[in-house]
Length: 125
Image (cartoon, rainbow, N blue to C red; front, side, top):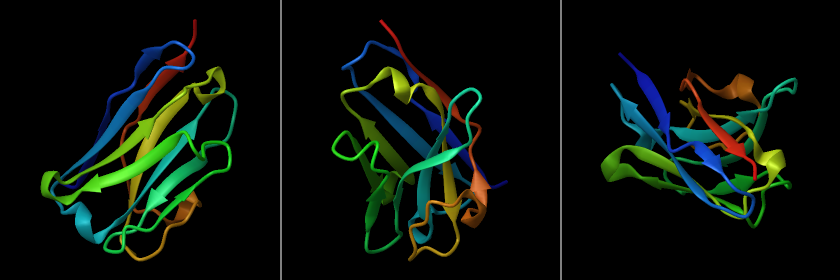
């Protein structure tokens, strides 16, 4: 069974950091582009970052540039999202998703084939 599992979310104070993980089972992530999305209560899901399969090209939403870093460890079949200087507006459920067309990095959720269940990030003092 093809599955993505996110982990690493939690409650942090403003200015804190988290590293989210997206681990795959049942398939190899290294041929997929991976995107991270988030959805806050009452808001639409938005793409925050993505990384292509081989070239490792990355993209970030303007709202997270300089604070979020996406990376992949193909040996561990895992993609990470390092989040620094967290702000209350980063509070959301964070999802990872896999796109079978590995050489593109898109922000539209419609392009992705597999999704994880999400991990909650709450930023509050």
